[in-house]
Image (cartoon, rainbow, N blue to C red):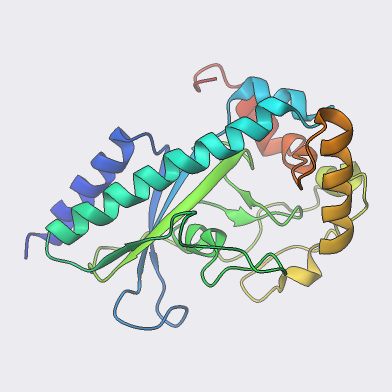
Length: 235
């Protein structure tokens, strides 16, 4: 087997070349079964102009970007899995083609779980991943492997503190304001059904598209706002 530190370096370079802006390695021992207990988390930010518009209403541009970024992430994690397999390891890409949400909005291995354990960010009061670099304005994907790469430091509790901007901004009043840690269940953070109903209502009103996309709670996040103001980041 090649040197594992070199494998991690080469993998990260490949994923970055494919467009990944945030990358981390997670220890998924005790979370997933089988040999593949190393998780790779990748993230892409939404364009700034789209996020700025979401502070008012959902847009068709957001709808299009949502699926465009998902497709790009599928390509990124698939390339990562192929690279690891060629290096002699097992790997499985958690693409949108193979990972499906159930009626309760759950997946076998949430991308957010991999991301927090890979140190990319924490779960905010809006029940979304918050990153220091891009706030919540990201799309996520992941892959799993048995390659024993060095793990990044996990983030096990919220950094939101006393901030309640997303909670106060939610038109459905779906967010509870609870601070997350690794023992927090999703139901403690938000009320799924009223959130979904409001997302569909706002999206249909604004675009005519009947789907559960809103974006307001992550557009107003102070970490997102910091990203929007940063001239050094790509728009």
